[in-house]
Length: 366
Image 1: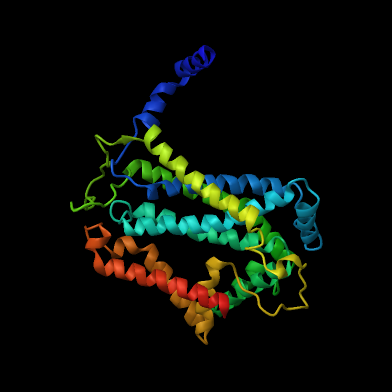
Image 2: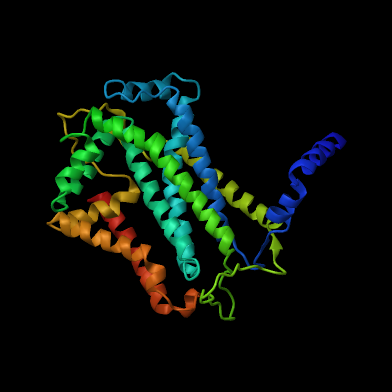
């Protein structure tokens, strides 16, 4: 241990390590009533890091070529030592990242943490969610199976309903009139280079804003929990609060451990939960499968488009709903944050969740 102390002292003399630790860890105070929901951000950071690592390992053997992509994925699953584990971790992780992001956004909604002065936190987080869905969509095509090929065909074809620019957008996404090798190349470039960089930048922006504004106090008890109007910049400090380390760091570690328990249970005990039989058949542009559906997080969107005879109406409704959510901090300008003291808001949130679940189940069985 004396050696470790000497190394620590050596580093401290050069960069002031003790000052950094005090400012960012032991001296960084959080609200005393902070709860486990606040640890979802840390869980998401771990998921993103794991996705990057497993994705880089898959790139060692994956070949982004229409004639070789499916064979390379099969080789990874059957011949590369622990290749099956890496691929399953990547596939399960992408689904759970969307799920945890949804929970994180839901907790932000219910605790009113999107209100002034945290509008930029919400917008950066909402944008990150949209980009993560794009990440999942582009990665879905890369195995070049029947499922991924035709699901991408259906997803990109829905854009054609947009007036004037619809046809152009479809050809731009596909690199041609039909899904083919050019589409695989574009989606591969987006999935491994462009979108991860955008997500990393958005995460950095989100954390920077969070650090500048401060952690919001959770609404609890009978005391009124209101946001400050934000007429002038003010950091929300928490004198008398708990230190991030070790107090809340242990909460973060507990949530991360629970996540890994669920994650590994899916990987080892339900590996085929996310794969249909068409996922194990190479793509064939001349044979359309009987039933092709998107991933679970797109099922509500998929069913919304099926409900209306005109796809444009479905796209407009979804765009309006997304815009409403993105601009919610500017629409809901009430000062109260406690969900039980906002009955109309709470009823709308519950109705929205039930509608989304209903459309998802309907889309799964339709």
